[in-house]
Amino acid sequence: MSDRPTSAPSADLLVLAGTVLTQAAAGAAPMADTAIAVAGDRIIDIGPIETLRAASPDARTIGGTDHIALPGLINAHQHLTGDRLIRSMIPDDLEPGSSIFEWAVPAHAAHTGDDDELSATLSLIEAACNGITFTVEAGTVAHPDRVLAGFDTVGVGGTLGSWGWDVAGEPWAGDNVDEVLDRQREVQRLTAGHSRVDGWVTLVGHDLMSDELVAAASDLARANDTGITFHLSPSDSDTSSYLARTGKPPAVHLDDLGVLGPHVLLGHGVHLDDAELDRLLATDTAIAYCPWAYLRLGQGVSRAGRHIEFIGRGGRVALGCDAENAGDAIDILGVAALTAGLAKDMTADPTVFGAHAALHHATLGAAEALGMSDEIGSLEIGKRADIVLVDTTGPEWVPRSPDPVLQLVWASDGRCVQHVVSSGRIVVEHGEPTMIDRSTLVDAAKERHDRLVRDANLG
Ligand SMILES: [Zn+2]
Image 1 (cartoon, rainbow, N blue to C red):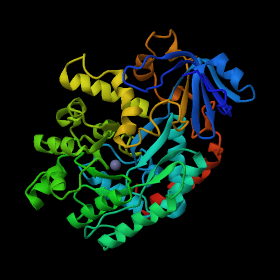
Image 2 (image 1 turned 180 degrees about the horizontal axis):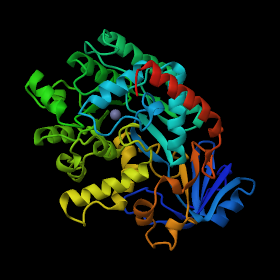
Image 3 (image 1 turned 60 degrees about the vertical axis):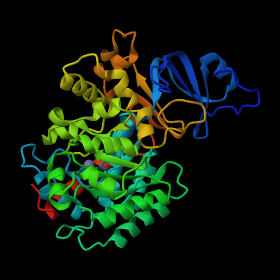
Image 4 (image 1 turned 90 degrees about the horizontal axis):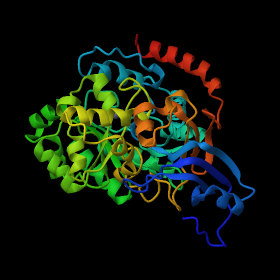
């Protein structure tokens, strides 16, 4: 990797680490005392520190040999608006559905554009500080232009769509299929040419979309060569609803409509029967797995979840954090530990799915689930320079394990992240966002929280 052609451009930035986890392939060995050279938004070289320093003597350097470098983490299901401003306020002892229809929906309905931008900015700052450089917005944005501004303020990447459902009797009801699709097309226009944020087609999903809408939305994603994401079966209520309406379980019905395919990222997929699992595998449909949300909401993942079986049969899975009242923390390293722990405990088999597998599904495996593994998910020459530097001087890293992935996943979490590079720019330095002063948002968050609680009649 360090045999650089003499004509190679010199780097703007050298990221230095005592250990580099490239995540370029399952089981890839850590690299010791290595530099990652960045020019513009790309990784241009990876090799011995002194060699790369000599090649780019004027480059800025960050990190050092007491750091671990890994690829920017991927959060494949995150609501960037709505309940951020009422974070951890929804009680955790409500009947199923109440948290959504009595809390999240009224909060969304009372949201202004200013609320959306502030919510997204706060969420993405937290994400970046925990090493997440790419976030899939989960499909509930009313003001995508303001959320895009949040992405730009923080400097991270992701995918973005707009709110879409067409069932009667709920907020935003009355939208017909064309109106929903026009909003998605508008986001595609908004994000066209953006270097870090891709326009995706997003629907709320569940059983809140007509057959006509979901089929047309999937076709729109295919036509635009982009992804589509929507919620399906975090609890067993979608199964009951689809069986009553269509006579088939949800994933079978959606496959029969021609919706499923490699461009589809289902949020959740917790309650799936054998036929549904087969259909998802046959169509190469991916799943975003958000176990903290299922635990917070009591949705039965520890009984019914089949994600590890799905992965074992070749299914594509990424990890997600979900919402600020469904798992709450935006920390994929915490999700990775839970994923590994659930896998072992649900099978009562400690030999299955450990920290290395979990980290794969937060990095390259996640990128594969998003159809973006040629761009993000690993530290490789030519890929987007999304790089996380972990500080190993904290107490959780003393003494150092010979296996850094074991220690990263089981002993640590996002709080060990010290510096973050997104598309070649340092967006977090010494644990603080560089593009915005986080403290300036505190008063605005308090004020908008109070107004939202009042206007939505919450609390
Ligand atoms: Zn969600």
